[in-house]
Image 1 (spheres, one colour):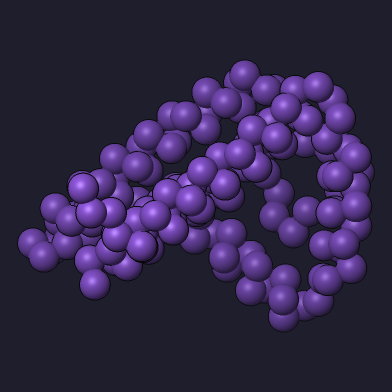
Image 2: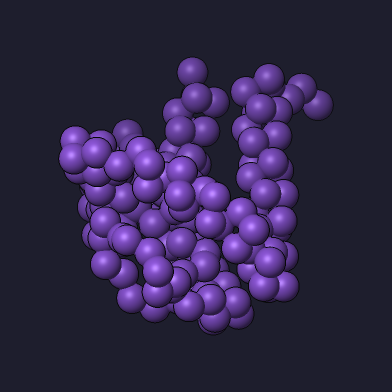
Length: 149
């Protein structure tokens, strides 16, 4: 079996991301996440600037269900992208949404009261729907594009 270098890199990145998620999930479940939450939050607050905030809000909106649905519909609408990207993209988006909702119910992590959010969100805070969706959906699309070259 001949596995390409790009596939090995993709599998490695997926495995590394899953390991980091498990570590963070363990910290959330055991109530020890504030040990890294607070320093990271303070670092991010220090980076805030009007133009960067606008850019980050735009990137965040790329991970919402509306944006992902539009991309899926566009990929499904065209014959050349329907099978290689659209079907798998829609499957990943739906699976990710269900898994994310289930994990939120499992962890039931409330949003911290002491944060200064750029975008108001409701519901539980972990795992982040925008972050998980962006990584799963756009990461999968990037992987598919790279492996088709």
